Image 1 (cartoon, helix red, strand yellow):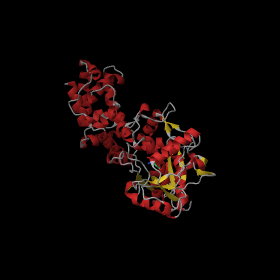
Image 2 (cartoon, protein in one colour):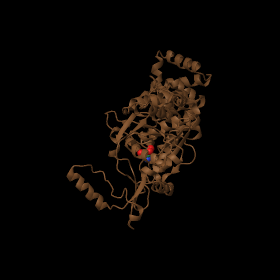
Image 3 (cartoon, helix red, strand yellow):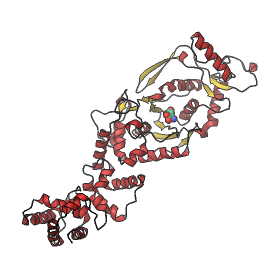
Amino acid sequence: MSDRPVVTRFAPSPTGALHIGSARTALFNWLYARGRGGTFLLRIEDTDKARSTSENTQIILDGMRWLGLDWDGEPISQSANASRHVEVAQEMLANGHAYKCFSTQDEIEAFRETARAAKTSTLFRSPWRDVSEDEHPDKPYVIRLKAPREGQTTLHDEVQGDVTWANDQLDDMVLVRSDGSPVYMLAVVVDDHDMGVTHVIRGDDHLANAFRQNLIYDAMRWEKPTLAHIPLIFGPDGKKLSKRHGATGAAEYQAMGYPAAGMRNYLTRLGWSHGDDEFFTDEQARDWFDFDGIGKSPARFDFKKLENICGQHIAVIDDAALLKELVEYLQATGAEPLTTDQSDGILRGLYCLKERSKIFPQLIEKAHFILINRPVELDEKAAAHLTNVSRSILAELTPHLQNASWTRSTLEGVVASVAEAHDMKLGKLAGPLRAALAGRSVTPSVFDMMLVLGQDETIARLKDASD
Ligand code: GLU
C-alpha cells in the first residue's frame, strides 16, 4: 500500500462548530498529504440528519479556510452516497459476509435480559446468522455483518503501535437498518475506499471503531488504509479540552485575533514534536511532519505558549499578508472595515506595530494613533500631560518640525534640542507628545508615530494640542 500516492481526508460531522481538536486532526491530515505531494480530501459526515446542519458545515469550511487548510476538489457529502453504501452491504450479503436478521427490538432486549441474569455476554447473537434464504420470513430485517467470533485481531497503528482485540468482543454489527438506511460505520469504510484514502488520521476516540471497520475491509477484500489514531487534546488541568478551559471553536480563536500561521504552528506542535523546535514555518512543518513525532499521551493546551508562538509569527509575517489577515480579523469581530487611509497607515506602521504584539487586538491597540482622526480625543492620563507648560513647549517644537527632514535621526535631534533648551530630559517630552499624537499615554515610540503619521499630520496634531 505504501506505493499508492498519499490520500488523506478530514471527515467532520457537522453537528457542531469546528472544535480546535478537530481542527488539529484536519491539520495533521493536511500536513501529511501536503508534505508528500499527496491529496487532502474533505468529507462532511452528515448522515445524522437530526443533528447535522448546513450552518455547521459552513462554520467548518470557514474555519478550515481561516486556518489555511485547503482541500482538494469539492467537499464530499456522506449522505449523498447512501445508495452506494447499501450496494456494498448487498454485496456482502451476496458473498456470505453479511446476513438478514429478522429479530425485533423486543427479542433483542429479551436476549440481553437473559444474558444479564445468566451473567453471560450481553452482545447480541442473532439466531438468523446461519439461516438460509428460503427459511426467511416476509418481514422487516436489518443487514448484519457476519463477524468472526473466535480468535483475536491485531491492528497496527502508526501512533498506538499494535493493538489487539478479542473477536468475541464484537457483535454482528448492523450495516443497514430496517428502514433501508446504511449505518455510519459502513459509510465511513465505503467512502474511504471509494475516495482512495491511504491514511486515516483521526482522534483516538475512533480506535475501537477501527476494529469494526476492519471487518468490512476484510469482507470486501479491500486494501486497508494505514491507521494513525492521535491522542485527544486536554486542557491545562489534564481533562479533555472543553469550554471550561476557554474557547474550543476555531472561529473563536480567529475572533480573538490569533494569527492563522501561529495557530497552525501551535496546533501542529500540540501532540507532535520535532526535537526541541517550538517555532517553525509551514514549509518546515510539511517537511518534518511524520507519525514518529506524534506522542502517545494527550497534549495539554497551553494558552501562554500559543500566544508566544503567535507573537513570533506576527513578527515574521509578510506585511501585505498581515494586513489582509488583520482586515479579516476585524471583519470576524464585526468591527468597521478600515478606510484606505487607515489601511495605508497600518501598512506603513506595521514595522513598529508588530513589535511585541502577540495577538491582533494588541496590534490594533498600538495602531490607535493611526485609526483616529483629528481632533485627537484625549483619555484622562493623556490629558494630564497637556499642561500649559508642556503645550507651550509643543508650540515651540512645531516650527522646528516644519523645517525638519522627516527622518528618525533628524526628528530625534529636533526633539532633543527643544527638550535641552528647557533643561528637560527627552523622556519628559514624550508624555505630551504621546498625548498630542495619540491621545493616550501608552503608545508606540513618539518617533515611530511621527514617521508613520508623516509631517503634515504630525504638525497638525501638535498644533491642535498646543492651541
Ligand atoms: N465524523 C467523525 C468525527 O467527526 C470522524 C470519523 C473518521 O474520521 O473516521 O469524529
